[in-house]
Image (cartoon, rainbow, N blue to C red; front, side, top):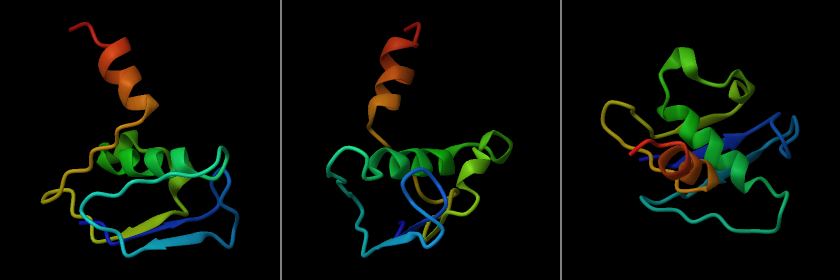
Amino acid sequence: MITKIIMKNIATYDEIGVEIKDLKKVNFFFGYNGTGKSTVAKYLYNLTLEEHKQDSRFNNCNHAGYNKEEHQILVFNEDFIQRNFIESNS
């Protein structure tokens, strides 16, 4: 289970970055537009991809507690809807 995320040098997160800690099994992110919610979601989804498909823009971001072999990350956002309902043939 992811216990901490560090977002740095990506979108609204500058070189100082921000640490999101004390995460639980299920987490809900909310806030004003432009505060970085979608960036966190995209980073989490990026972790689920094969290494050669991962977005290099997240190279300065980090996390603790996630083991790809033991854990599953589910991100339900606009990108999820696009991939699974709009672009899907089934």
